Length: 352
Ligand SMILES: NC(=O)C1=CN([C@@H]2O[C@H](COP(=O)(O)OP(=O)(O)OC[C@H]3O[C@@H](n4cnc5c(N)ncnc54)[C@H](O)[C@@H]3O)[C@@H](O)[C@H]2O)C=CC1
Ligand SMILES: O=C(CO)COP(=O)(O)O
Image (tube, rainbow, N blue to C red; front, side, top):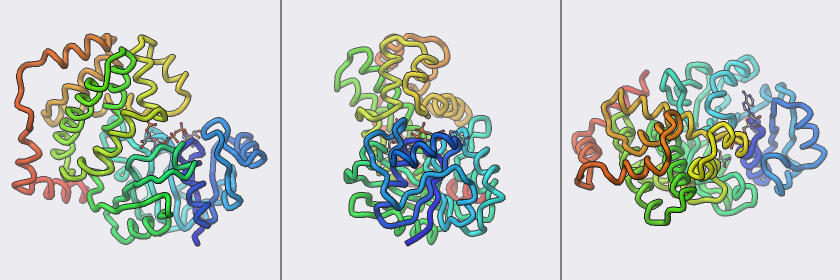
């Protein structure tokens, strides 16, 4: 059994700590707010973020960053916009070779870097693994069967994480396509916001299915030109996570989308959700990337207009419905698969 530190004591960090603690690992759950961590220790529950889930005795809530020094594996569960700052903060505490597992789903604003790239820059002496897939904290915390995927340039590190995280209720796959796994996990949040707009407007299952299907088409288009394997977008980190986030009562992104669809202003919605809604920042990043790469992303464009340009969600749905006639199957992914260009891109991006 291993000594593991989870940094970030929100809903996802807590659920992963509980799962690993139940598997018998010695888990330090490290949060930045000392009084909250004390309260969590007394109650054996993270009431604000994951109510109703009891922490096993193997999980120790703490505010002491000394626990980083002992960690054999570090699981990072902070919002994506805090990943670089967090890595800089912990750099001096972490042993060389400790595996760092990023669980945040987003991209760095401004640089457009994937979070594994950010972590590799800041922690060059630590193997970086990313974890993604359809996995709401609320269900993992209650031991409901869940499957995820881990990816890394370092296949041994990915397999070590697979071994440490796997339980009879938490099944972990590996995938060598780090780019696809990270992009799928980040971009699906945009579509979940849009599925929420549709639900908030009172539209039905047809509308949601349309958004999800056309959503994965545009995610794949951009993901492939950025170096991802098209098949990854059909897997757990793609379609799998898209389904759960667009349809689950637990999704923060979907919940935010519903409230926006009902006409509430963004700042009020974010306050009401009270946890990170990654899709908002990711919409901006994906919108900018689609322009940079010249990739058509009509749903992302409408999400951008709703979030940042004051477009009415109903008008956004109409705009999507009234686009010019199209053929359903897009050629980009097929062409990329046939000529192997994604593999070259993949190599390029990993070398950077
Ligand atoms: N909640 C879920 O079911 C899942 C979440 N994720 C991803 O995990 C990441 C975290 O999400 P949640 O746990 O839902 O968020 P959350 O809002 O529940 O918790 C975030 C935690 O990070 C802490 N935090 C924020 N900035 C920090 C900083 N600079 N330094 C230290 N701690 C900081 C907050 O205090 C809070 O404890 C997101 O990228 C999300 O997309 C991925 C899979 C499932
Ligand atoms: O990524 C997630 C589930 O796999 C979590 O999505 P939300 O942040 O929308 O809750």
